[in-house]
Length: 376
Length: 154
Image (cartoon, rainbow over the protein chains, first blue to last red):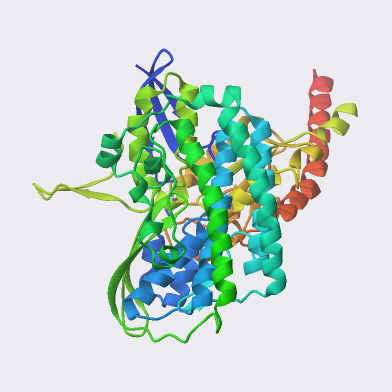
């Protein structure tokens, strides 16, 4: 039995994680994951702090999906204390969250294309992504950690000039994306590397509770939490899904979600122009505990927290999507013929390690024994 | 002489995420994009510490990284240039109270610091270009002198 160690520093990985692949010749038989390199104890730092500091910290859980964390944090408190957010703020949240989804999916596509050695397509994706980053800087004032959400609305309003610029850039982006999607679906060498590799079926998705594009590529459209979000219900959102469950299906789901996001931004901007009023209300925080779920670019994000009357955080729990997707990775490895396919399968689930590094404890329901989480 | 000249235009970079939030890492990835095009300056991002001239470290040093970072620093070849990127790498930032063992310059010597949360891609590029060619050239000279010294004693 031979072991191929990958990481924590490896050309294909953006983030530190250690994967030990157990191989027989070229075939991958099993795997072990070793995590904990990025554990900083964010939930522990948040305890006993005011919620205004908490929303700042929740943005730094992950840099790629930073916006959706603050949105979930704010909506959780708004849901607990029954605060009505103004219409303009709700639509601006949709616009910015969808822009962030586009940039996250494009960077995932670029990393996948680099791992299948198709550098041209990766550069096209990164080039299209820069225009999205420009739009986010235009709306919020910063590229990555935006600090746009506050409890009770958003920080800034946009004007007519910015709306015109968004429409113009989005139309250009749609043309670019049609081109990229056509190349991805019809390119001769791209689908050879992706079709029939890393297959996961509906039953294993149910077993591992995988979420996000991984679940949607295996015929599970109802895993999209945007279907249950009140603002997205107004926009008549429909999820994208496929039923092959292999690497290229997962990436095509991501590419097509970019197109739906573009349409959602258009609809939200139309509704924004009809609505009037401010973008932020004065809040009155009531103590208690509650929970809220949202659809991050990689799947569902879950916040559960309890507050005191003054707004101090007693206890907070964050669950992020990659925990479940990494569990699904174990099943995908059964259809990976070579080591390089194992690496592309790893990038196709779009893991975000710095989200994932929460303390995970497994409790056996029958015996009541508690043991730390491991992937053996 | 010729080797010094060309080594200035061939800088290999290894990115080490020691527990940051990925914000700085995706700004380094955007440096690869055609808009900034890091390769036109002769900078190649390999993520291989054994071939790297420049270690770009992002994030506060978490507990499992403390010994690993020292190992990686020892593995890098002689012009060991370290660029600390982002507020967390300079002072631990908002993770100061968390499970971290300090900023990067507490563990390994740091040559350049880029503040910001996260810094813009152009700032990261600027820092690498300011520090790397001169450092490579001067360290190359020291190596050359050391070699000549060895020869003369023999």
